Image 1 (cartoon, helix red, strand yellow):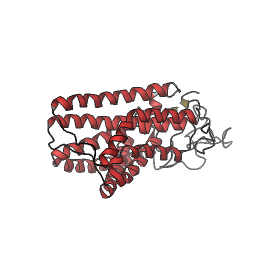
Image 2 (cartoon, rainbow, N blue to C red; image 1 turned 60 degrees about the vertical axis):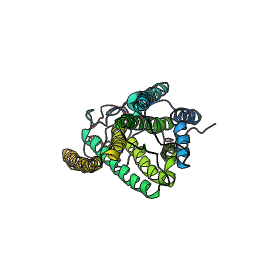
Image 3 (cartoon, rainbow, N blue to C red; image 1 turned 135 degrees about the horizontal axis):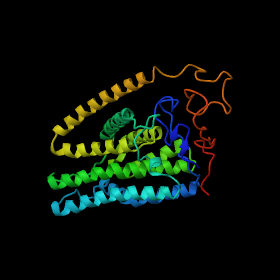
Image 4 (cartoon, one colour; image 1 turned 120 degrees about the vertical axis):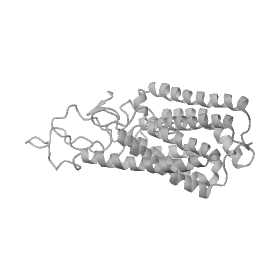
Length: 338
């Protein structure tokens, strides 16, 4: 199937009129359907390769059996290199496996949200970051309230540990969002699974390796669900990788320099202000919302084939034929595990 859709390549532009509602998802990537058995097999294999050890270590931490990190430059330097190498490997693995199914890196989310013109939607990217930050703050509050366990911390946070913590923050942002979000969601959509099922699977996998929080995983589930929605909405994982990295990194830095947490709060407020300004600017640029009913139609009324998905274009005929619609997508009536 061609990757070209009406109005440009997948994913489509974000915001009106490309998405009918603020909660609307991008259509699934235009690639051949795979069986649910294959989709879940790939998801399980890739997830286990990167997170099985974390699940075990998290359980041991919750039980008080896993030692707190300790060491020196001789210990933390190779550990930091290992974290960065794992990040690179995760990107390669998800790209290569997805390519075998006809999914390009862009369709995996390795591209910025874009406007109808095809240019990067920087304003939308700021708003994605604001949504992600709000979800992380709220989820973090729930986790802090309910947590029955936490990761161990070194007795002394020196520069060697901060080097490792920075590399670990990079790995958290890259590996988690590439594997547990982009790869899981894209693969299961290609398998024709319903969006609710995909969201529940992605959230459950995200919670599994945060088991060291105990009941505090409820907060993880909250922001993980918002991340799934943001990815479905924009088709981009890059703003989420950046926000995840910054969130984790400022936590590590704040343990040594508490002023960092105050600076993060101010930066978060600034992000919300910028997001609001970009939303207002985009709204004004759209000229006040949707076109009037029938605007842009020829005198004879609707063109053959009716109204394309996503709303009426500014003029008929459209530049390209609208994408084909698979009525089984999102209904659960696609392929089932054999």
